[in-house]
Image (tube, rainbow, N blue to C red; front, side, top):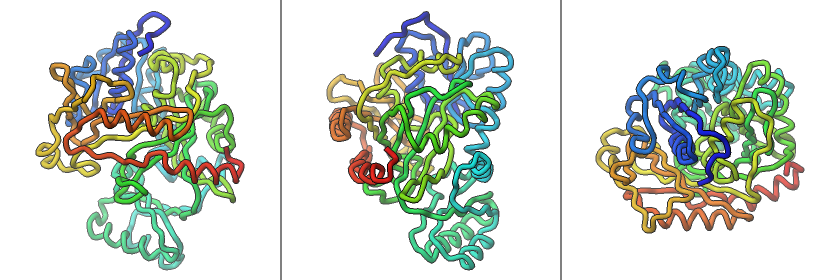
Length: 431
């Protein structure tokens, strides 16, 4: 673990669900003082024994040299703290809306003269069914607002007449009725799904740019239900046509809105163009942990430099980085009884005492043992790096084989799509 090159600082991490534990723990191991606040009550055991926890983050504002917010929804607080002179890594009300309100995000893309896929907003399933019947096509059902956190509700249709989408909408109507909230129907296009991401220091994007390929389905070969994510592969580049056509066009708006943090835009690309799908105007999970595996400088120092507006270049590894979540029941579902029966307080066992590339997720530490806690069943993120994708996968798989998680499961194909995706991206001039 690399130590910091400057004086130790006080880092206050404000977390929605405890996802930021790995970064907080790494920052502490670099020699800084760290405190972690978790908003969600069922998640508050996460991080116990790893880092110091606090019950009320606002009581520690004066103590902190830097405050780091790990999720959307804190934009107002971030803006107020910056106005008061604090160094803050986090969102703004504008960037919160980019992610949380899909309709707003799509309109902002259009406002910035970025090509978007046709979409329509609904609050009624019956209205959506009537629309698909009148305009038959392949669609994606995208929950918006609060329900978009329920990733299993996202449905990607495959029928060109929209018949599968109609069946799913009818099922949602029966099970959710008027309690679902608003959602989008977006026209589906075929191509490569790819994300471009970058850190932003309040004045400009920090190079290099990160290119990420997400793996959202539960099972290999994109089978099963949609999860938040099961793993990602990535690499870093100095220049990207996709970045130039999307995020770069938002640079002046991000300056105006006083955004300082990390932002990602997910796209579908093909021979006809680049089509942005959605923003993630915060750390991505597991993206930030896999990024950390590819960054050759202390993560705490990097976040401080970004938040304090410094202009620098991130030192990154050549080649590729991959990462896979190791999860336990009931993931990806919400079932407290199943979690308590099969997973709560289960011990993460290491065959050899080697923890490099092992990123703690929903864990606590008791007598130096790592125990699963929280309520969702995300135990670990395991990463690997290498000059080639195969090298990175081999390192990750070797590290996974060193870990025993009872009832654990993970995807075995993270990074396999690169062979096919890279050929197509090269042919379209996007690499």
